[in-house]
Length: 416
Image (cartoon, rainbow, N blue to C red):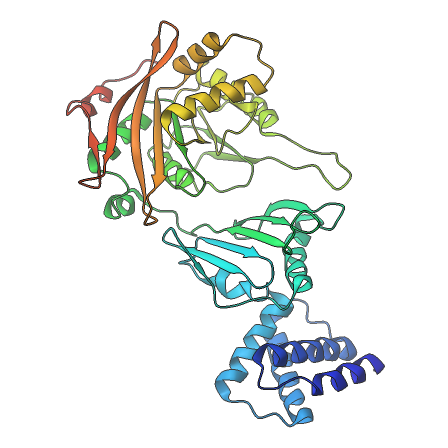
């Protein structure tokens, strides 16, 4: 009770015209009351809402504060979010139009809508407030974040991917990045309506998927690689068994026969890590018709390429790259990271024989995401060469076929 009396005394000094100050004082008051009453709510949110509303009224009576109905409702929601949700972020997380949430310390919060970044009109109280929300997010994952373990990756219950980094590595306070995902993945028709791909190119790619062509989708961070992979995966015949491998489960395949695997980071003791490469090797023992790797970023590339060459045609993956040509260079580099001792020429021939198509997707300066290039790979004397089939035309702002006859090329059956 002494703590309660001290906090009540301090709260009287708060400028009650300051919304943030009033909220902070009420937050301390409500938490103290909940602890003093020793009531167990057992995740009963309605019961907790009623209690918070009563405590706010009690606080206003004690301090003789008159607030309007709208401000009362706002304070009630914010305090509920603080106690059972994610503080100032809860409103942003609930907004389906927001794709990314970026927190650079307590006073700089940015959001991305339709590919465009803007500053959000909200903030945290201080660094401790940011850190408290981060810890609330990662606690169900069994992870911790502090000076000895200042970086953490994970995902929320709704599938949103999070990355947090705190001092001493982050100089301006705790930083948090949240990549949100739609509950209902984008459809092919939505991509067409938004101008992300042309009908001709989409028909070509869907034929490629049906005919079990191996495909790599390249692009920068946030360019829409996973979205396109989701769309194309819907054209995989339902009779086929698919195994997906991801660092954080983002793919939303609608096929019935899907086995979803996810890597596991090491625990706080530095053990227990399960890498993508281990999962790819295990997937080969699970009788998959196709293997989909959410993102190729390390030594698992060698095993994926070998799988594509040994009866798992129609497999797909994504890679970070600035162009289709750069994607080949990155694959070559990652095969080298796997410990493979072959020559550069041999690695390129392995890539050329495994992959059939590279689809490069990007984001224009206005935030619009679209397919920029579709190219097929061909074996050459000293490795592999790219043959561009579709390329983005800046004048017409659409994906154009280089050769008007490219679509029928995949209509014939492919022997596997």
